[in-house]
Every structure is written in C-alpha cells, then in structure tokens.
Image 1 (spheres, rainbow, N blue to C red):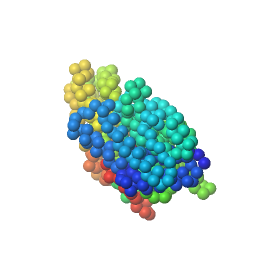
Image 2: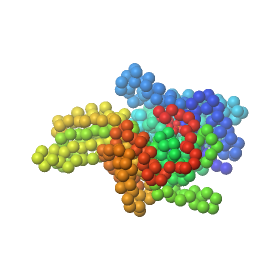
Image 3: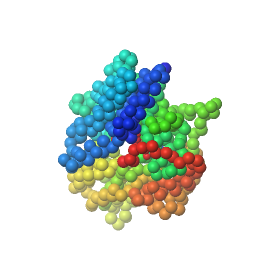
Image 4: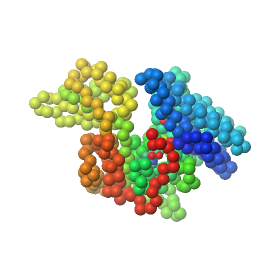
Length: 425
Ligand code: ADP
Ligand code: ASP
Ligand code: MG
C-alpha cells in the first residue's frame, strides 16, 4: 500500500479531545499499511484570534511579521498531534512548512508555492514514522523569510505534498461529510456529492465554497491528484474530486447537470465614477490595482453618457484588500482623471455551477426567475462557460441561495446535512 496525505482542518483539531481523535484516525491508516503524512491547520479559530490580536497592536500589521505570528498556530497543533500519536505507541515527527520543503515566492500573506522538496518528510516516513506537517506555511526562495499561503492554505499544502510525494490520494478531513450542493450551514437540505470533476470544483471553490481552496484544486488538477473530502467526525465516504468519474458498484457516477450553488460574502465592490471614455483608462485603473498585488473578481463598465463622455467602472475584490485598493486608486486619481470612488462592502455573491449549463438552454433564465421570485435584486452579473454569478445585497444572500437550490431541484428529501463542528467563522 502506498503513501497517503491526510489534511485535518482547524475544527477537527479544535481542542485536546479533537487532537486525540485525529491521532487515532491517523494511527488507523498507518495500521492498515499506509505510509502517512498528515497536514494540520491551527486549532479552531486560532488564526482569526491571532489576526485580531495583531490588529489590536497595529491597524495595518507588516506582512512579514503577520506571517511569523500566524505560522505559530499550525506549530502548536503539529507538535500536540505528534505527542498524541506517540502516546498511542507510534512514532511521529512534526515539521514546519520550511522543514517540509515548501518553497514559495515572497508575497507575504498570500504566497504561492513554487516548489516542494520533501526529502526530510520522505526520509521520516521511510524510517517508519508518521510525518506531521504544519499547513498554510512555507519559506520564500528569495528572502528566506517565512510566508503563509492565504486563508485556508493548508488545503494547498496537503495537495502540493501529495504531488511531490507521489501519494495515492489526498484526503481532506473537515467538519462536514464532503462537498455538498450548497453550504450545509445555509441549506439544511443540501445533498452530498459523491463525485465532482476538477472543473466544477474549481468554479465552486472560486465562487466561495470554502470547503476546498481554489488554489488547492488547481494544483490537484495540474498534477492529477485525486482528492477525497470527508469528515473527521464520521466514518462515511465523502466526495471524490478527480478527473474521471468514480464507480459505485459497477456503475459510473454521472456528471450532474448542475453541481451546486456557492455563495461568498467576503468581497466588496468599488465603483470608479466619471472615468473618461477613451482608450487606456481601464488599463490604468487595473494596473494600479495589480501593482498593489490585489486580485479582482468581477468587472462591469457602464455605457458612457453621450453628453458627458464619462463612464463608471465597477469591480469586486476581497474586502481585506479594500483599504489598499482605495489608497492605490486615490494616488493615481490625477493621472487617470476620474471623479470619485464609491466603496460598498455590504454585498454578497451567489453562483450556480455545472458543466451541464453548456448544453442546457434556459439555465440563466431559470436562475434569474428564482432570484426574482425570492424578491432579490441583482446588482452585477458575470458568467463563464459553466458558471453564472450575481452580486446582491449581503442580507439577501442566504435566502437567495436557498431559493436557487430549490428551484434547480437540488434539495434532498432525506437526511439533513450534518455540520459536526466549527464556528463557520
Ligand atoms: P476546515 O477548518 O476543515 O478547513 P473550512 O471551514 O475551511 O474547514 O471548510 C468547511 C466548511 O465549508 C463547512 O463547515 C461548510 O460550512 C463550508 N462550505 C461551504 N460550501 C460548502 C459546500 N458546498 N459543501 C460543503 N461545505 C461547504
Ligand atoms: N489556519 C489557516 C486559516 O485559518 C490555514 C487553514 O486553516 O487552512 O486560514
Ligand atoms: Mg479550510
């Protein structure tokens, strides 16, 4: 039997009991004959608490120091987990991201993995140990400083290690039984998905289904690493994310027409008001945003009013980058020549995802009808081949997700989706 990489999220290791429960699961896999590498997140809401603490001492903490602080969270859980495993009579060694060979670029707080050199991890498992790796962190190739991979980044650590170690599978253990047709915290009638393609999962993740991080799915697709998302609190089969459908008995699981509904309330929208309608204006605006290392999501440009020759450009971005974006645009105001900026962080995004959209006409019409029947006003729209997204008021999001889920026949008629832990923070 080969090597497996298992990743345990914060809610799975929230307290001493959780750590002991996870230790037992890892030892089970080892007893079944696998070599095991376990990637862990910080306990419970530790990362949020550390960020709160940093903001109390400085409103805009330096990226380098914030990374140094946040990586402490994963160090605590990795060491405790190794101790708990040793207590069960098995050898375990814990490693920081840097020791595990996770090499990144030097962008603090959202570094990208550029290489993984897992020599120490391979040696440790070859000696018969269980290797425990701190998720979400690495070391910059250039500056040699400690970096973090962005919120939820332990998922990416796990898949990157699975690829570098040529693992059979990457198991992502979390506080729900798999990937559902909507967030089970919002839609009680959400259904567990048995298999989902990398493509549909990428769109769900990019649209806010935080059960898997977008970058982690990208990585898994690139190296063709199957992911099994499942609960660390139950023994149930979870969701397989892979390129080819899995079999159940002798039957292939079918590709769903609509995979699910995702929502995201972590974005804000900025409107640049009164932009001269001439070539190069949009380029200057988005160059300023890019130079501030901010990723944008949707972009809409209004038709200019003939009388003024001015137009408005609206885009969405992570709320956490809001301040930085406004500052960057204000600095270039004179050069670009717009009138003013409007900032709105009371928005939410709802997305419908499914490969079947390409061949089933009417999906967009049905989506908009469901929203209108629920009395939800649409502010922005964007689409890809297999996704439709709209921006609405933040307060309408939950209602809208439930309405769309029902309208597309995704509601389950059996058990309610179980959420085993976590605070949803
Ligand atoms: P972990 O701490 O294990 O990394 P996360 O909180 O990052 O866990 O991700 C698990 C959470 O993702 C679930 O508790 C659930 O609320 C949320 N979630 C959002 N969309 C989905 C979905 N489509 N299917 C399952 N969970 C989802
Ligand atoms: N602890 C980090 C976070 O809360 C990374 C992770 O959990 O994946 O974002
Ligand atoms: Mg997560």
